[in-house]
Length: 252
Image 1 (cartoon, one colour):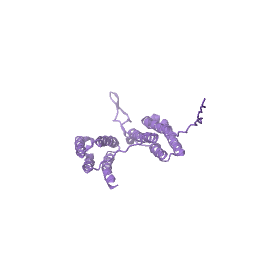
Image 2 (tube, one colour):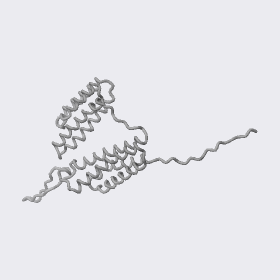
Image 3 (tube, helix red, strand yellow):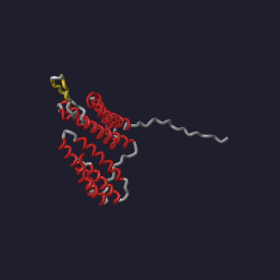
Image 4 (cartoon, one colour):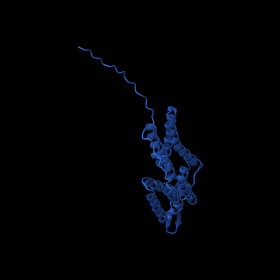
């Protein structure tokens, strides 16, 4: 158990440093760097998971450390402590096994729910931190009207109203509840757990539809995956089978 805990410490260190970076740059782009580097870390660790020898994994760690050094202007240096921790774990044989889902209906249901949650949160992050909002101001000069358009800003920089903040929090919570409901249904197999998944998914899709003119377009993939999880996890009722009457043949 202690080895498994130690093997997860590099992830905690990596996300901690990225979170510190995000806090320093908030709200002007730090969230983008956190999401991008987290995805890069996942790809990097998935690639090394296929390596059979410790030395190969350590060499891969050194190569990724070189990439982080070259990406100094994209906050790559923030990941160097985590890469050192990854290399130490790989050298000691404390590799992290990638989680896998069962290859059955339950696994497909939980996989769709997890993808729904991750894509939903990613869509929310893009919608609030991406430079998709702009304002324009005009000044009158001797030659006429001159329009000055400042750089585009994010929704966070433009300012969140109380209603918008509550809507975003509720949407994020529903995306998380999709995975929780699917996990409960897969673990217990109870029909009421599946009905809970249906209720959460319907509420989520309703919010996505209502917010189509603002952030809803970024949430459509997550909403579609919530419905996919509902469909895959749909209880299968055994069909009534006809009784089989054995045929008898008489001797002639």
